[in-house]
Image (cartoon, helix red, strand yellow):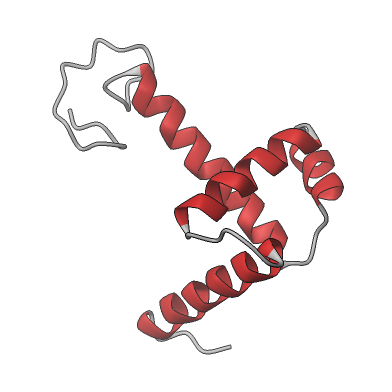
Length: 102
């Protein structure tokens, strides 16, 4: 079988059946959660609302945002706005590539 995260072939002995290790499993879930948080950001939700909706602490929401800020090289200014603009542009590009127009 191939791991869904890293694509490495493995024997399937790991309990999840879809990932080769706990590290890949945790990374996959962290990325999925960040995607959920990013979508709510684009819908205009506040950290408190995001945390309540997803059943996580506001501090955890902030940690996800900080990881996104670092990964997009956002170091100053109105970070949430800059991140939202970057994510929105990516969303528009993906829709354009897929032939979807809003």
